Amino acid sequence: MAMSQELGSAGPAAHPQPAVRRVSRWWQAGCGYLVLLTITAVLPSGCSDKPDGIAFGKVNGTVTLDGQPLPDATVQFQPAAGRPSYGRTDADGRYSLGYRGRSWGAVVGPHTVKITTEDRIENEQTGEVRVMKELLPAHYHARSELTADVTTGENVVDFALTSNSKTSR
View 1: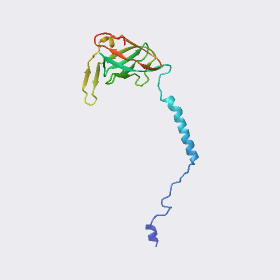
View 2: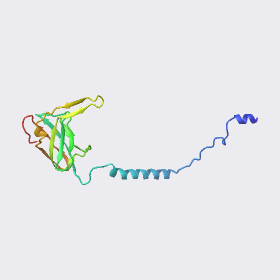
View 3: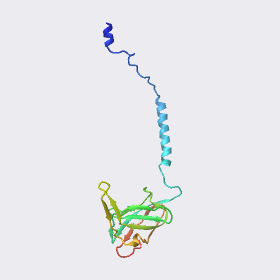
View 4: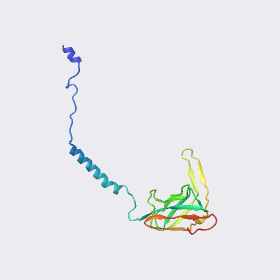
């Protein structure tokens, strides 16, 4: 009979169970509340890296050339001091400005505006480079005479460009 006891199932002493520590639901709820409170306190201040002391205004609009939407143009708003804001027109000529890659718009104040269609596009997979030629006269980009004033809040700034003559915006 001793043999069958040896080959049979092992008793509780052969495989001891780990000690289980029970935590009250109040403790779990309290810890969860503390984590949630910490996240809500840290996220609003830690995730915004907007520069302190700089006011921004949202800027969007439409760019047309000879009455037709101008797709794939780069729009640059350059303030008197500081970094510029950029946007790119879509197929309908609409753009929205971003500052440092964020959708903050542009710095409040007067800007010189440059609009260009010249671009160098490289296909990362093939390495092929495609150069887009400039379609606009130099007074819209290299020697730009375009200006805009950005205010806090929403700004709609449209540009009606022409191939041969200057525009007043």
